[in-house]
Length: 101
Image (cartoon, rainbow, N blue to C red):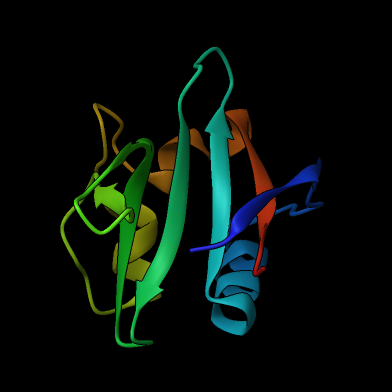
C-alpha cells in the first residue's frame, strides 16, 4: 500500500492502464463527481482487486471493494461500489501513482 501521488498520471487508454499496472502493481483512481478514492492493486502479483481508501482493517490496510480476479482483462470489467467496472468509468476517471514510502 502506497501513498497517492499529488500529480495525475497521463493514461489515455485501458491498454495503457493495464500496462502501467503490470509494471507498477498499483494506482489510485478517482471518478469524477465522487469524493471517494479507490486503490487498484495486485495481490502477490497473481490476482487483482479494488480497495476502499477510506476504510482500514485491523492491520491498517485498505478494505476490499471488489472480489479478487486473476487477469487484468477481468480486472478492467470488475464491478466496484455501484460501478460496472474500471472500463465503464475510465473516461470520467483520474489515475494517480502509488508512491511507496
